[in-house]
Length: 340
Image (tube, rainbow, N blue to C red; front, side, top):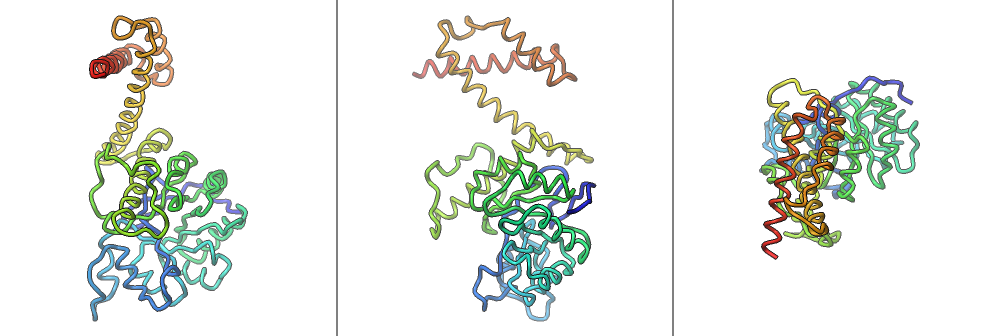
């Protein structure tokens, strides 16, 4: 088992995994999932969202560092490694072949960050031992990845024991995104085609795919695109809202500070919307609702409790904030009451 307790952060393409906010990675590209005759260069160019075929006479590395923010690639054989080195941001040691030591060694020596997946049923010691082996054979940049049926307790234990970043592959069930971030995942992997990953983020509040509208395996076309878009938004929402509540951040620049504030504001907006809905229910149940039914003693007790969680603000600063929140909820309840 690794004895490396110091926290590590690993840059993967444009993303920093293991420090600051959790990240979302658009896909894990497995060359093993493609026909044996498939050109690894073409598969990975498509994954990056790069147009056109290979340009003869131009090294792949000169064409590669464009497109998607981060591409993880799992080779089929050692023959795929030159394409992985040229076009991927990290090489994946897949769960199905963690005991193929020659291929593991060749992947680790590639000079890329190594994403080490846990073999199905493998204990913590085996997983961390393989990560240590890859770190020794490579340049030390190793990320752990839990996929398949997620064991979030083991994910948390691996992160604590190793000090290495840990990804959770939630492609099979994006609904686990929030739980994975809460368990300590430094990033989420979802299935999102390159054109989707390269478009600007949608604003908060964009309606998701309706519940029960999950697309069955094998579906193509607009439904599959809608499913991928929903998975991406679910993961983004988890790293934004849950991450803002649970992940410590130490931004060092103004843009980083503003991005961190934006995440906290997103979490605040989510909680305010939920609070308004609950307050509306209270108004319907109270014998005397609206402003006439305000319980000022309860409000003072609420502010006192909040001051325990926000001592730097204190009751005096929290009081006008909560008064504004409460009054906004009362106004909303009155407006909705007039419409019914």
